[in-house]
Structure formats: C-alpha cells, structure tokens
Image (cartoon, rainbow, N blue to C red; front, side, top):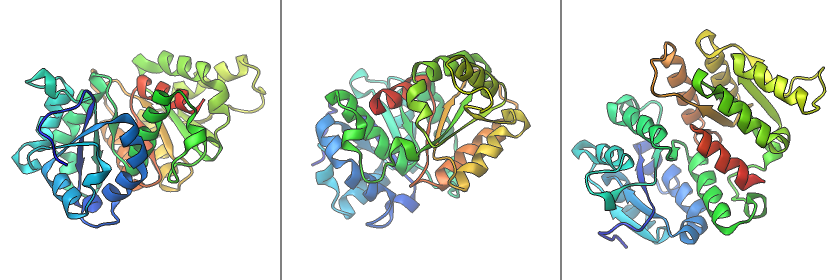
Amino acid sequence: MVTTTLPPRTFGLAAHRLHRSTADGGLAQWAAASRPALAELQLGIAAVGGCADAIEQHALASHFPHLTRLPYGREGGVMRVVSRIAGGVHPEQELAGAIYLLDPLDPSSLYPEAQALKRQCISHGKPLLLTVAAAVEWMAVEAALQAGVSLRARLPAMVPSIDKQSVALIAHDALKSAMVDFAFRHFDLLSQTQERFATGTTGGRLNEMAWSRGWPRDLPWVQPLRSGPLGGDAQIAELVLDQRCDKVLFFEDVHVARQHEADIQLLERAVCTKSFEAACYHTPAMADAWARAWA
C-alpha cells in the first residue's frame, strides 16, 4: 500500500533497469530476502518512479510496511533522494539512508546524482547500499541490532557466514587511525574472516596492531597491497571480480581532492559488477554497526 506520509525512518530506493526489469531481478530478490527485516524494522521505503513501477508490476508491494513514491529519475527523483539525505526542504521528509542498485554499465551510474548521493550519505553518516548483497545484509544488520541478537542466529540465505567472508580494509589518510581503532575493537571478529586485505600504509599499521595483539609475527594479519594511488584499489577490484573478496570496508574522505578518483570508481564498479556477492560499506559508522551485528 502506497502512503503519503513517511514513518520515522525511511530509506530512499532506486535501481537501474538491470535490477528492476524482471520478476527475479535484483530488486525482487532483495525485497524477498529482506521482507522479515523490513517488517521487524517497520522501515519506510521512498521509491523512485521506475522502482515504484517495478514494485507494482512484480506484485512486491506487500513486502514493504510503508511505501511512498517519488518522481521518475528523469523528473528529479534521485535528486530528491540526495536532498533528503541531507535533510531535505521539509524536515519530515528526511531520509535515513539510501539503496541504489547500480548497473555499472548503465551510463547514469556516472551522472552527478549518483556521485552526489554517495557524497551526501558519507558526509551525513548515513548508509548507502549499492549492491543487492549489501542491501540484504544491511537490512539484517539493522534488524539484529534492534532485536539485540547476533546476526549469526538469523542469517538471510543470501549472506555468507563470517568465516566464509573475505574483507578488504581501506582508509584515506584522515581516517587511517579510525580504521586501526575499528580493527582493534573488532579484532576477534575480523580474525574469523577467511582472508583480509589492505592497501598501502593502512595495511602496515593493521599488521603492527595485530602483532601487538599476539598475532604470529611471521604471518601478516592482512595481506598488504599497493597504496591506492599506486594501484591498490585496482588490485582489490580484481580480487572482487575473482570472488576472493566480498566485503569492502572503505573509510572514505569525501572532503579532499583525490588524485586517484578513477581508481576509487573502478573499485566501486567492480563491487557493483558482483552485485549479488559483494558489498561496500563506506564509513566507520557502517563498519562498526556491521561488526556489532555479527558479534
């Protein structure tokens, strides 16, 4: 049922045609896998026009406790999501996060709206979920935290157990200390993952932290790769494409000029290419919530 008022917490929802054009596409699979979490959270969904059409066409409306419709993308629907992530014109329309299921081959993935949405979500500390895998896991994360139970006890079918996940840890200069602190606090959990990778200086600092915690000094806790500007992001992209890495925890600093912006976009496009397997979480707050849910 489509409503005209937003519940206390609402996520914006958009998806490229690849994910919404068929009854078994990414949008439908996410809605089915996340239906219990959406109901438990009583989460509102504000769907951009094409998504709203697909929800109706594929008879998915019953999956959403609260559903509102935004204009089509060509009429400014995604622009409205960006504005409302930042607080919007009307405070009651503010969004708590955004799901944007991207097709990396769709030219609109490079439009200003898509870039601005990422920037505003990171700036305001709100979740941005760009793949089916991320959207499924994140709904389960929020539901587990709300219920005060471990995600391990209620794992959606599409989400692998923590010992089957491989994690990349990336942080820009201003956030490297935050990454080391995150890894220190969640060391036991992260040590349960199948493999860990890190770029440049971040990798060196994480290994030093792990050795100080008693990790064997002859074994790297994270596999160190090149720094981002020298190809580390591209190396992780290849690991994602080879399905050796399915979780990217990327502490991004969107407030400084980044000389290797193309490499960052390449990594994100690799993650979106593996939409049903890979996820990228962009902020310390998202990484911390993810880790607490798995504890």
